[in-house]
Image (cartoon, rainbow, N blue to C red):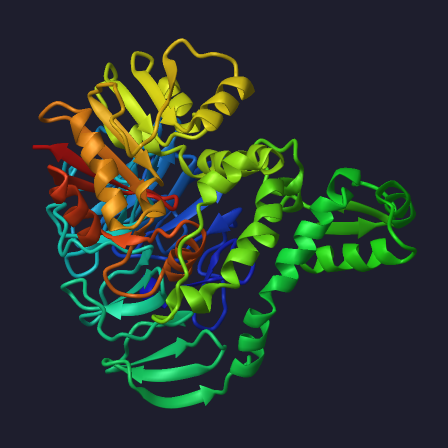
Length: 557
């Protein structure tokens, strides 16, 4: 019987001929289709094996799972792990893995016992030394791999990176192009890793005979050519640009609604009924329902049997939450909103606008000070968990965390490196709050100092985490100059910032926010490198993280 003519029965318990007749009398719990050299995986009870077209077992061995043959090897799972077998049921190699894929182009992706992905050859040996957080199958000599920072690139058969470009998501090459997603959206890249055109989309399909189907962000479907030009538009936009722009313009509705819920104490009153909230928060009749429904539209609260409660997202607005955003809600709706109203003056050449002294204003406002620095602490707790491991310290360094706020990053460092010594430098009122809000740590010291004056302390490394972006270039250079004075030759500075991409517009709204609140700016890698060079540093490494920040490593020359 020709196995290529056999299919899987609708109930997947056996195989059938083209006419629908059973190919054999046996029945199994589950079967998969036949693959060359004419064997199909089957399972019955807690055992699995392969059969020939007449339903007979291809070999005597039994496994817990079996899969199809690819390039004459099949992945199987036994009590000792996953590996590959030959058509005769013999093991192809002695090594066992936590998971095995299928061979494609002489390579197979596997996952080891440490949850790392790699590719192996048919003898079970690794194809290269590198290990990845994820890896895909090879096609035409290249495969997609994902690094620890969550970004992906292409590698060749020897494991070497092919083009050095990294993307948030990536597909294998198909007819010279691969689907790729960067901070702006989906695009196609060529074999050099470069975008084939400037446009970005919500979704793209692979090119087929010179054209690809794509979905725009407004929901429209286009067919484009390899230069990104529209050929046809099979589906018009599902969202009007008028409505989208209008929604953007009323973003302050959301900001003020969230802040009102925090300010009125509604968040702390939940779970509760509308009547109980009105009484506890002192609201007018019917007001609780109106505000709660608006919060529901923002997915912050939900109602069941007249009882309103916070969603997982809404829980971040509780003051007691470890990474509370309650203080951020009040800052954005209050002082920050007022600052943004002066944006036209800040941009106009004829204006006498000057950047506010936000740090001085916060220091002078005792009612605002505590919340403002709790807000910064929440963002630090959310964004900095990967930072200590990405620094690559020996573990015994003296570290200065300059502008370290309430010491969040310093504490994370001492947890990751039990022998490091950290000195947190910040304004006197911030240091006082940091000391007061946390139990003393034996390897974290505090120093009240002005970053624009000599610090009076030496170290092996300095952290500048979201510090330089608060200042224009001249002020940033002054801070880096004092950083250099605190370090020996060869000492390192770790600049931890959101980095603007070399192409695209991601981060530009944050850039405007810094302009209006501190007079600072977001920067590209090239701009940070110029600042480092001017202060006596050489940019040694760039380490993007899966979270928002990137670590730029400068070495004191």
